[in-house]
Amino acid sequence: MNSTNDNQDKPVITAAIDGFFLVFYRIAVFIARFFREAFRPPVEWSEFVRQCYQVGYKSLALVTVTGFITGVVFTEQSRPTLSEFGVTAWLPSLVAIAVVRALAPLIAALICAGKVGSSIGAELGSMKVTEQIDAMEVSAINPFRYLIVTRVTAMTICLPILMFYNALIGCMGSYFDVHAHEQTSLVSFFDNALAQITFLDYTTALTKSIVYGFTIGIVSCYQGWNASQGTMGVGKAANESVIVSMFLIFIEEVIIVHIFNSIR
Amino acid sequence: MEDQEQHSDSSETVIRIRDLYKSFGDKHVLQGINLDLQKGENVVVLGRSGTGKSVLIKIIIGLLKPDAGTVNVLGEEVEQLKDAALRALRLKVGFSFQSSALYDSMTVGENLAFPLKRNNRQMSKEQIRKTVDIVLEAIGLPDSINQLPSELSGGQKKRIGIGRTLILRPEIMLYDEPTAGLDPITCMELNKLINAVKERFNTSSIIITHDLTCAKEVGDRVAVMDEGRFIREGTFEEVFKEKDGLIKSFYDYNFTQ
Image (tube, rainbow over all chains, first blue to last red; front, side):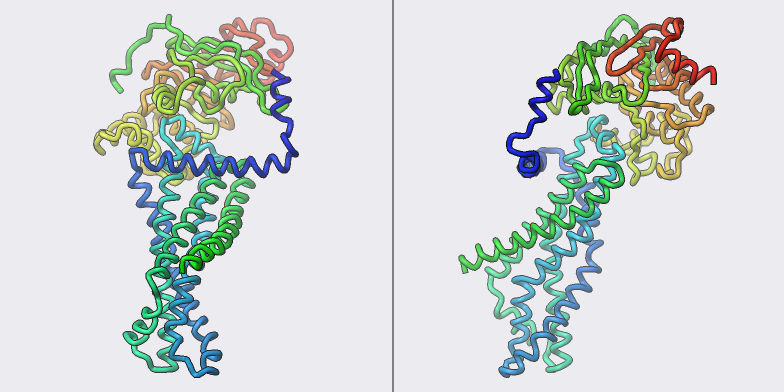
């Protein structure tokens, strides 16, 4: 028995490099298990709806405030430059393009990573270290389907909705600022704004938010699911849920923008 | 529940463990464990902390995989079972955690109803409520249905943890340190509950503990574990007839001091 264990403990390359690839392998297995479990009945509808409420409804206030402020600030910051060229009339379309193509997906995702991602990491981490997940296992309940599939799916579905809502509120913030300076009507503002937004812009924003939502869900659940070392592990899971999600969101942003620009 | 309240045929082996080994890195936790649990029997596994007692019952329920050896529960080789078959087996084996492991976001009633709802989706709300009430009455906490786990004492949490496993009508109960961290009177009440569960629900049990009073009160047979092996086995009187080494330390600490 001893020799077998000794061989298993020896690193293939070095312990650090082995560990790095092991994490990737475990995440890949985690994602594969998500897709395997997600399409098997029964669906945990009540838990899914509860998670949509937690992710979507409970983030609305924060998304509203940040969206509105983003719209106002972006408009304020852009006006002097556009004034120099005498094209302040472009403000609605400029803001709309910036908000839909870049700001709304990113802001909604970062808010959800901070607010919901940390909460999922801490909740699952706490359940893990207090053996509540094991308690589900021994009660013949599939904890992965009940806890992970519902949370990741809710996150993936709710983030695009929050993103479009954030974009709308951002444009409203911009409208109030533009209206205060240039006395534009709401209809005229949105006519100008939407005229420059193409189907590809909406598709880009939707793709981004689906990818970001899935990333936040998977990363937060993975961190919580694999928490260890008691309360310290719970804090670590919450913290790493946010950090890793945000880091991956920025990398994905670059990749998605490149892909869609090549189509454009 | 009423149909469970029958007396048992004590000749059938419900758990059979042979040459069980388990290591975590360099730490060899289980080193050749052999154990049989007969139907209707309560076996107490006694030992110091860190000797592998909890690892043993986690292997029995399939939460951990052994490095070598076999665990046969109700005729099934646990380590060879696929997910669905393992889940089906777990419906017949209750596991009471040392920490109780209650779902802290749910009330007591929801904690008990949760495994029932998930495993019996055709059950009506009235049937679930009725079953929850029967189990709460059986564990002596009929009025706690709307309380949150944070509002319960340690002993009450243990009782609810036991109730949550009983609601699935298990044939076997695995208790992990049922009296750990409790005062002597609450320990005595829990010992009575473990015996009552055996009588009323016709269960066979493995009880992990380092509490000799518990071992004496609930155990038909006692197996003493040290450094991953059973060093003595028999009735409580047989095991503690000759008091030497670890046995003496245990006895002196629990009964002499």
